[in-house]
Amino acid sequence: MPGELRPILLRTIDYLRSQQLQTGDFPCFRTLEASFYCPCILLSTLLHDALGYLDPHTRLYQTCLSDLLSSQERRFITATVTGMRFRLRTFIAWHEEQSGVWQLFGRESGLGPDAATTACAAVTMFRTYPEERRAKNRHVPALDGFLNAQLSLHEEANVLRFLALAGRDTNNRTSALAAKLTSEDTPIPDEAQILNFLSVAYSVARAWRQAALPGRQELANHLVPRIVAQCQANAGIGTPLQYALAASALADLGCDPSSLFEIGMDLLPLFSASERWGSQSFLNLEVGSAAVTMAIAISALVRINAQTGGRFC
Image (cartoon, rainbow, N blue to C red; front, side, top):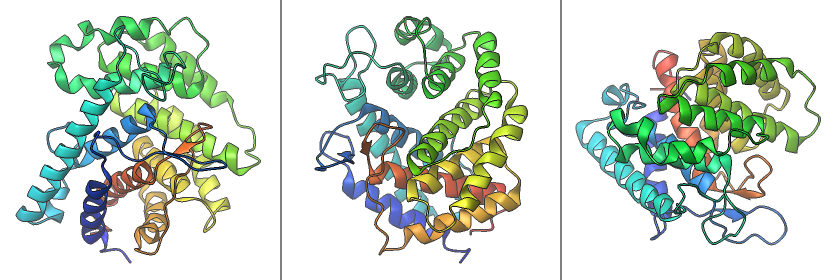
């Protein structure tokens, strides 16, 4: 089965291009009871971030793609991905409040500002600021307003990622979050809590890798065995989103190549034409997007390929 990455990547990007709405967003749906379209800014930022690994204009870009693709295929991927991300940023920017914050389900939802959504959306807007001006952009004081609130692990990880990328001193909060994360070792009893754990692990691993937060190895020593054990316990019965989040987290935490290869092999069958990705809920939001799941999965597979010496080429 290894050797399929190139056609999978091309098919996935072409499919995602076909799914992008005229607004720039991708379809998100309520996952309980009657399913209906529901914009979710947080999910839009996840897709924008995942596609960054395929965008040569970002520091996340996986240079191994230059060897994997022909020059014509690279031009197709580059033009398509940068176009999708530009339209996503336009959609995300349109939902920004005057005070520099975002609501989880958009500016007309009436739910009030959301810490994780604001932090993730603010990171997408870094593209519009020169790096030397990031610490002075309008979103820094907006995020400061959340720091005295009681934040969940997911929210804290995303706020820390933004503040660290903006050049703020986050050492005290980083140490506190790492201590809280490594102290949690309770069993995960049901599917909803499994997905919640993997969603948090994804956000935490992304924050530590992208913002180069200290103590990543200690955190990996705690989280990686739990993620791997969860994947092994649910082998063949996990949802595509579970596999995508687990694979991304393991790639970000620097998991050993053998475990990475195993979860990469679990991801490959999901890209078959007959597979129904569906809209699986991220965290407990009761909102999901097949496009988001696919983007996280393909970006994870590309990184796993790079970290395992090109075993999926």
